[in-house]
Image (cartoon, rainbow, N blue to C red; front, top):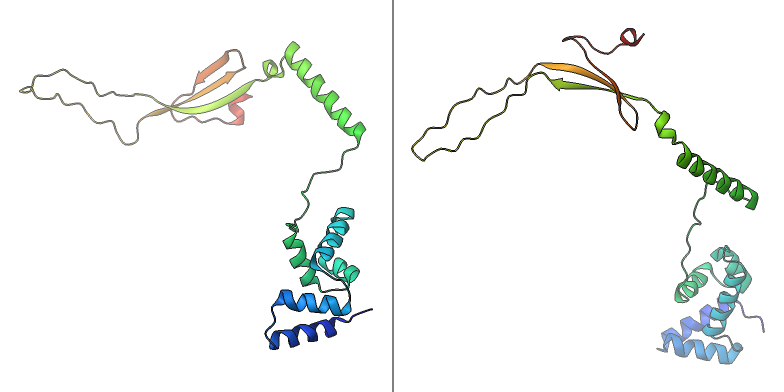
Length: 188
């Protein structure tokens, strides 16, 4: 017997008004219109989800002739959550995976035989303090006074250090005269 949603809702409303619980009302409606227990709906939903887990609640509601909210509640009861798939940059075919593995193995073997880092020359510029005064510590008796030392200026004299190196050694370094900075003309 094909039972409309409005008829079932009306029966639930009547049972609610006379004080029956939801479980008792469900049992009465299932006895009157046929066996339609929650467990059977859950088993059907479980099978439908296992067949195609990308179905929406609306699609499942149309398939089971019920509301999407009911489907959502039953799926939640089954422990299911609706989550987005994870993004990957692209779908790789088996041949692409093999090409990537071959490229990685080639780079590793080349690194072991002749490291690419031995061919890299790096340069850096650094401002270095021209004079770095230090405060000294003294062993003194309790009656001795602590010697004074001048505080360094707020803006000490600095000099530019340019250094070139590889992974093995410093190739060249140069201290630029005071006031000169690094420009393209300096290196040409």
